[in-house]
Amino acid sequence: MNNSYSRIRRTYDRLKWIFIGIFAVANVGILVWTFGWARPEEQCVGTHKWWDGGARVCATPILTSDITGRLITDPKARAEALQAIGRAPPPAPVAVPKP
Image 1: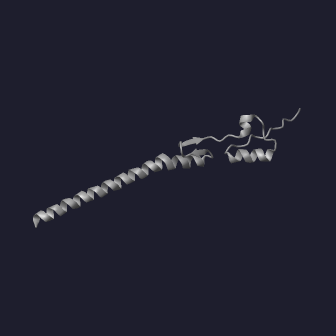
Image 2 (image 1 turned 120 degrees about the vertical axis):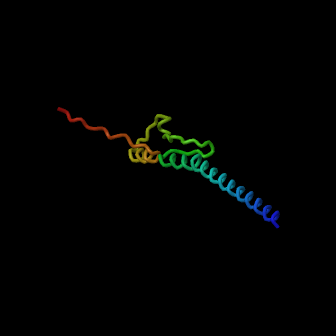
Image 3 (image 1 turned 180 degrees about the horizontal axis):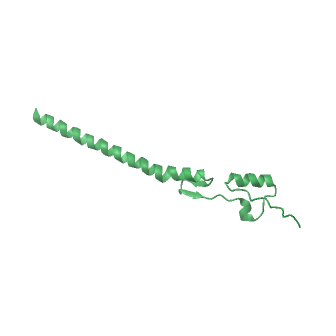
Protein backbone atom coordinates (compact mmCIF):
# COMPACT_ATOMS: atom_id res chain seq x y z
CA MET A 1 0.00 0.00 0.00
CA ASN A 2 2.77 2.43 0.93
CA ASN A 3 4.75 1.60 -2.25
CA SER A 4 1.70 2.29 -4.41
CA TYR A 5 1.12 5.65 -2.74
CA SER A 6 4.76 6.60 -3.21
CA ARG A 7 4.63 5.77 -6.93
CA ILE A 8 1.46 7.81 -7.39
CA ARG A 9 3.03 10.71 -5.51
CA ARG A 10 6.16 10.63 -7.74
CA THR A 11 4.02 10.48 -10.87
CA TYR A 12 1.97 13.42 -9.63
CA ASP A 13 5.13 15.43 -8.86
CA ARG A 14 6.62 14.60 -12.25
CA LEU A 15 3.44 15.64 -14.08
CA LYS A 16 3.25 18.81 -12.02
CA TRP A 17 6.76 19.85 -13.08
CA ILE A 18 6.09 18.92 -16.71
CA PHE A 19 3.02 21.17 -16.80
CA ILE A 20 4.85 23.99 -15.01
CA GLY A 21 7.65 23.67 -17.57
CA ILE A 22 5.22 23.76 -20.50
CA PHE A 23 3.54 26.81 -18.98
CA ALA A 24 6.89 28.59 -18.51
CA VAL A 25 8.03 27.81 -22.08
CA ALA A 26 4.70 29.04 -23.47
CA ASN A 27 5.00 32.30 -21.51
CA VAL A 28 8.55 32.87 -22.74
CA GLY A 29 7.36 32.19 -26.30
CA ILE A 30 4.56 34.74 -25.94
CA LEU A 31 6.99 37.35 -24.59
CA VAL A 32 9.45 36.75 -27.43
CA TRP A 33 6.66 37.03 -30.01
CA THR A 34 5.24 40.18 -28.40
CA PHE A 35 8.52 42.08 -28.02
CA GLY A 36 10.19 40.65 -31.13
CA TRP A 37 7.37 40.80 -33.68
CA ALA A 38 4.17 42.51 -32.52
CA ARG A 39 5.56 45.60 -30.75
CA PRO A 40 8.00 46.62 -33.53
CA GLU A 41 5.19 46.35 -36.09
CA GLU A 42 2.86 48.49 -33.97
CA GLN A 43 5.55 51.13 -33.45
CA CYS A 44 6.44 51.18 -37.16
CA VAL A 45 2.84 51.51 -38.32
CA GLY A 46 2.23 54.12 -35.62
CA THR A 47 4.91 56.36 -37.15
CA HIS A 48 3.37 56.06 -40.66
CA LYS A 49 6.09 53.79 -42.01
CA TRP A 50 5.91 50.51 -43.92
CA TRP A 51 6.35 47.23 -42.05
CA ASP A 52 7.77 44.23 -43.92
CA GLY A 53 6.87 41.23 -41.80
CA GLY A 54 8.97 38.78 -43.83
CA ALA A 55 12.22 40.65 -43.26
CA ARG A 56 10.99 42.43 -40.09
CA VAL A 57 12.09 45.79 -41.47
CA CYS A 58 10.53 49.18 -40.82
CA ALA A 59 10.98 51.19 -44.02
CA THR A 60 10.46 54.89 -44.58
CA PRO A 61 8.02 55.52 -47.43
CA ILE A 62 9.05 58.01 -50.09
CA LEU A 63 7.17 59.68 -52.86
CA THR A 64 7.90 58.75 -56.45
CA SER A 65 8.42 62.44 -57.09
CA ASP A 66 11.32 62.38 -54.60
CA ILE A 67 13.09 59.80 -56.77
CA THR A 68 12.25 61.12 -60.24
CA GLY A 69 12.52 64.80 -59.42
CA ARG A 70 9.11 65.52 -60.96
CA LEU A 71 7.04 67.40 -58.44
CA ILE A 72 3.33 67.00 -57.96
CA THR A 73 2.02 70.25 -59.39
CA ASP A 74 -1.42 70.18 -57.80
CA PRO A 75 -0.95 71.60 -54.26
CA LYS A 76 -3.93 69.68 -52.86
CA ALA A 77 -2.72 66.35 -54.31
CA ARG A 78 0.83 67.00 -53.04
CA ALA A 79 -0.45 67.79 -49.53
CA GLU A 80 -2.55 64.60 -49.54
CA ALA A 81 0.40 62.50 -50.73
CA LEU A 82 2.68 63.93 -48.05
CA GLN A 83 0.02 63.34 -45.40
CA ALA A 84 -0.43 59.73 -46.56
CA ILE A 85 3.25 58.96 -45.92
CA GLY A 86 3.35 60.92 -42.67
CA ARG A 87 5.37 63.94 -43.76
CA ALA A 88 4.30 67.48 -43.13
CA PRO A 89 3.88 69.65 -46.20
CA PRO A 90 6.55 72.31 -46.61
CA PRO A 91 5.68 75.65 -45.06
CA ALA A 92 4.15 78.25 -47.31
CA PRO A 93 6.55 80.95 -48.46
CA VAL A 94 6.35 84.11 -46.41
CA ALA A 95 5.87 87.30 -48.36
CA VAL A 96 8.45 89.88 -47.45
CA PRO A 97 7.04 93.42 -47.51
CA LYS A 98 8.96 95.81 -49.75
CA PRO A 99 10.16 99.02 -48.09
